[in-house]
Length: 424
Image 1: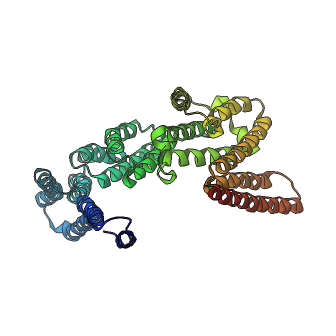
Image 2 (image 1 turned 30 degrees about the vertical axis):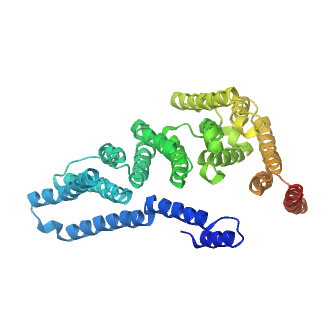
């Protein structure tokens, strides 16, 4: 039990706020809670131990590999896989702890990849990297549900993103199997949300999955700035509105990866679009059918989430960030004929988003949101210094004004919080 809690309980007993019996019951409750809690430290070191053991075996075999016959090499190629499967069977039949499952899952995950590569090398089986990664993905997927290993799941996500990048960026093909592999872990993700809705581990998934989708999106696009920027803004709009769903909106901000990635991604994308030369790349003849379908699908998905929030009366008070992807979509169609005007309107949209974030921070009395809005405005002013001819004196005065604005906004927020506490 935490020593701080024990001291506070002793103080409460000394002041006769709680009885010694109540103190003992509280201590017993925390003791039982700590006993039932899985040993995270043991799980972490178990995973590291399995990785280091596997690497050590590989190094030993690699040193003596040329001295083995083909039959011996084949046997050794399947040894890690056989050991991993035996460990998995032992873990499942004995219903071992979560630490055992994490360790076994990671070992078996790497054993699969090792065995595939060794067999291919022994028998000179030709094949590209993407086919090797896809085979690894297919064979490793059942581990997620059999052992319920979160470490294996995260490694699986890294592997599928690597496969998607190898196909999309290397072979210039759409990695549809990467999407299938990503959908394969959705049931595991939804079950984790149901069982541990406010857990730190669940919060990690809220970051890993949207980041994976973001990386994979680029592997599907091939039209450059002609529509790619709009596609990303639609994706960020979808992420932001998902982050405003009741479940995600109730989470602490650091666990709401959808909301943060959606907000930051929208602002960064709009800052890129605020440069006038970017709009010269918005050429209708360069837009592929594939990219158009992806963009429309993401926009429709974001609109569907907006419709759900509207039906649940969750769109009030008004939040400009939730509709920014629709506004930017209109600007893109307008930018085909009037790129300069579209660039100016994009700058106005960024300024409005920054001011809106300041208002949200002021209303909620949160310094983080307030300063985020001020940073958005600062970033916009900084970008304009690169493509506008403004005298250095005026630039210096603008930065002084922004710095004064930072100080004034935070000072008045601090005074407001003191006033609120005084009334409480």
